[in-house]
Image (cartoon, rainbow, N blue to C red):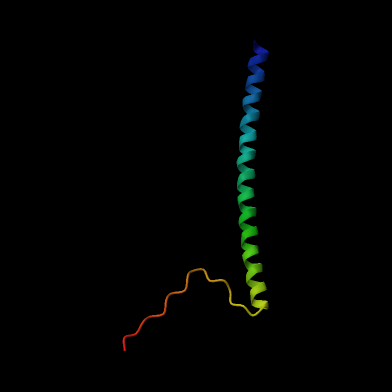
Length: 69
């Protein structure tokens, strides 16, 4: 029984370590995805500027104001 208790405690400690590692990996993956998205957007802006195209708009253009005549 003592060996089983020891094995259970070791398994619990290993599970905690794995959980901490998984949390760290998730945070790192999120940072990497953010960096990839950032550089992808910048690359797209550079490519468009080389083609003489305007940069992508972040908001929809506002409609022109109508004037009464």
